[in-house]
Image 1 (spheres, rainbow, N blue to C red):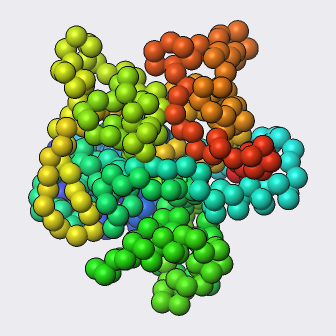
Image 2 (image 1 turned 135 degrees about the horizontal axis):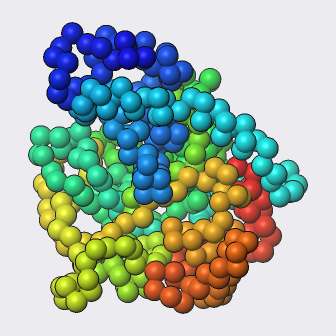
Length: 394
């Protein structure tokens, strides 16, 4: 494999994988050769969800290797030659796929799974502020050299901060790759175009038209879009995540910690916002621990860049594959079951046992609170049972 990394350039100093060796390298690692996004995801098992870097810090070398492979980063030659043996990951991915199939899912009736799927993609589960955090400037703003992080709309074409009704599938959806193929052989995995698209790419955006589209059946919605669009980017394995970073500070008052209730009323996720910041509380300002961020009104089109004070930090929409086996839930592990996740936060378990050693998780401690993410908590018991059956099937 070292031969594939050799290049007609100086042997010393940082370098990226040469273009001439890239195809051979991909084939040797059994990686996709026709879709850069799929290749990058494969290198980190599921790169579309960069939250894995927060959960698996040892994946950072894999990200570095992926960036070096595509010329986005430079690393020392000796380091590059050592990285690939671990992060080619073909054997790891195959083992994970095999082991996952052997996991015993809780029994459920197919009719309940089908009802849950329709509920997941068709019915509003709650409301969310039209806000997201960007770690890289969108192409339309590439010349602005904006510093990370940036604040932008979650759904382009809608007002920044507007509170919008959302379905589960609007955030836990299917991120596509980069190649294109006809819809006939590449159907939308969610069954709905509006799971990802809340505005039309043309300048003449008419939000009211999309509000009407949201009310249509999935079949009518797809039929309408197919009238003009015959192709779409191919969908890589669906992880049920748009990988969006959602800010805790939904009301944008510069506060996040201890402000979950206000932020939830403003359309935020409202979950526990105490994270492991290395900033002692006495050193916070009057508005808490906050950041100055650039604000982009529409990532698709160049426009004025404003500044805002935003309470740190944010949470990433997680993937739902294998969610039946990944309890406890929420980013701080404060909810023990899927059923509890669909219960109003005030009625969720105050404490619960974790593992065989008898450790008890106490949600009354700072950092452990099980507040927020009340999507779907208003549904009927039958609907909740159906959505749980669908989630356990993933």
